Structures are given as structure tokens and as C-alpha cells.
Image (tube, rainbow, N blue to C red; front, side, top):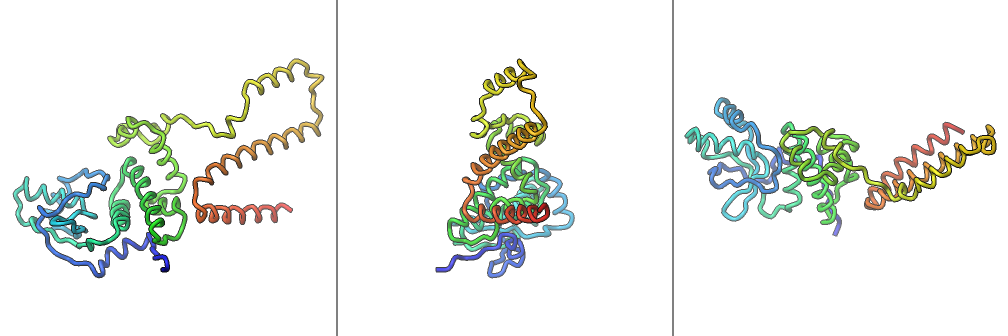
Length: 288
């Protein structure tokens, strides 16, 4: 059976068309919040004011689950409707216009819809971005493991979905994976900035770096300084020593890159190798 092909960036367009999906007005009591939604839900009273003034401008997207409907898109709108009906006693919004996703839709696809909509339809906090990166990355990997063919490298897809560069994605991942829970909670509350959160992370030594014996290096420097005349280098020796040092540094860097590459799947690795091979060949041709 041929693998299904799935274009992640086309999903929102498909969602807006809602082809083959049922539309209905559902009682707000039948709606339930999605436990997988970790995005902030601030500004509910202001949103309720707006809905009261101009009406609900966009349908909620829900997925049937037994006798209830789980919200996929529209969590803040749902909370604003609860505010209107229960606190402001405005019964006009008891029935909520919804697009209903098929109950048997793959959970991975539903999860991606949740994140794709939230990352494009709101101003995200730093903590929102960190959580989105983690969960979108896992969902894409899950989709690929299920045979849903998603074109592109995972990291690039995540970066494009969240609207960040790949370098920025790595910064958020470093905090998510290495910062303390206390630091991440402070980031969630807006008590610290990204830079402050990064500053709490202790840099990890790579295996290559651990091979250097600092004490031995210091001893060698002292021995050289004991007899300047005996260890004076001529110009040719300086050039050779510098070249050797550059080669050593390159080996260390390449070893670190190799360690990182082992964490990638073959498709991602081949795309990266092709990209940089082309750049290296161009550089060699320009410097012949």
C-alpha cells in the first residue's frame, strides 16, 4: 500500500474549506476543552466584549467524542461564550456554531490542526512557543511513523509552523530540555525572559571536549615559557603549528556534529549533507 502523502502547511487551507465536514449549532454544555491544549487563554473578558458587540465571527472546530464534543480550535472563544452565558446571562450564545471533525480522524492529524491554528491565530508567549515546538515535533514524528508522508526535515517543518528560524527553535528546545521546572514555570508566568532562562542552563561538555586534558595543556605552556630560546619558533613552524591547531579544532567540531547527526533520521541527515556538500563544492571551485 502506497504511503499517504500529507502537506502540513496545507492543513489550515483544508480546514478553512471544511470539505466533507458537518456544520451544526451545538449547545455550549456539550463542548469540552481539549486536555492537549497548553496555550495561554488570557483576555477572555475582552474577547467576550468583542463577541457581544459584533457577534461570533468564526466557528469553533470540534471533534465528537461519545456524547460530547472536544474543542480542537477555538478554546478562547469557548471560554468567552461561557463568560457571556453564565456570568453575563446572555442566552443568545447558548448555541455555538461549530465545524465537526469526523470522530475517526487520526489523533495525530487532529493534534496538528490544534497546533497549526493556535500558532497562526494568536500572539504566543515564550512558553507557548516552547511547548508548541515540543508537541509539534512529536506529532510530526508520530505521523511519519504511521506512514503519513510529510515532506521536509522535521526541524524545518517545526520552525515554519511556529514562525521561527531553526536557530530559534533550537534555543527553545535547549530551555525545554535542560532548564529546571522552576525556570520553565517562571517563563510560563512571564516572570523571566528567554535570555534569562537560557542563562540558567549549564553548558554540556561534548565528548570531544572532554578528551582535552587541561592540566596537561597548562604544564606544556609552563614548560615552553621556562626556556624561551629553546622553544622559539621560526615563521615556518608558526604556520605549521597554526595549521595543525586549525585541523584539531575542525576535528573537534566535526566530531560534535557527528554526535548530533546520529540523533537524526536518514532522510533529515541526507538533506543536510546535500545542502552543505553543494556549498563546500562551490567554495572549493571559487578558491582554486
